[in-house]
Image (cartoon, rainbow, N blue to C red):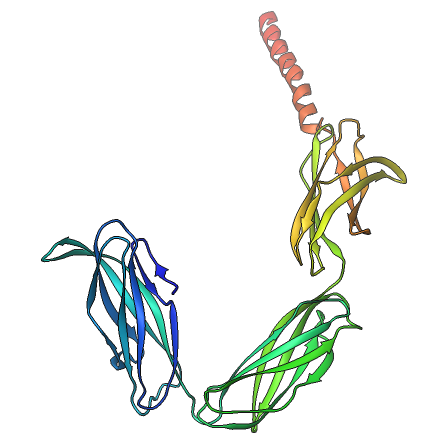
Length: 361
């Protein structure tokens, strides 16, 4: 049993869901745990929607250090509830320190577990969830459309059309699912497949347009089609001047569904058509669809001031990807520095001239 915990007290299970049935009587076991080194009292309570239909076995439980205890929660539902959908309750335990056999002092912290009572909607009503697998380019995408009938009535005919859209929001395919029937309170999965043979690597969006006994519902999900490809997303260059070390960072992302090892980049730096320098980044491993940064450092001690063109060639899995960008090398001896150096002698000359001019006069 999983225990939700705070600093001193825990409660579990963290969540329980109950489907409404007229005049339902149900008993659920919960547990509280003392997680500190002194005795505590766990004061039990219930709050939230439909709390009037919930009864706790006891008001409190005394717990020695490290000990746990169970208690029962009794659910007694009426013949009808007028609030369809999930009705949320909290089963809670409030910690108090035991100071004597006679009583307790000072409530400190509390924990709660969720109790959800799902009440059917009138008529025909479903909840739908669409999932799709991430695949390599050319493989089959497996779709799973999960349908829960959370209405009061039986659904005789339900099916869906799954529309697939590329990253430009262009519809590239439509597939039809099988037709099913589903009883009130029942859950079923519908499977569908699509071949990605003619699709490019990238992120795709799928929308399931569901029809059931004259009603409509939609469910949506995204999935990825991968290829052995790493994309250079961005290039950033640290501020530097001639003679300093320039930091060059490449932001890269894998477009592949598996790990790619030994990823690095060679950066070639040109002035015009002349190759003036070449540097290499660190090596990294990229996980499926992972983003990381490659770093390189360029020593500009022997580099002339001016504009340069750089080409970053990314190396991975016997393939390459490249990106070109510009670099400006500025002189470390800026105009402001020259002005200051010149101004100081001029200032001394002016002061000397004023002094001697006054002396002569």
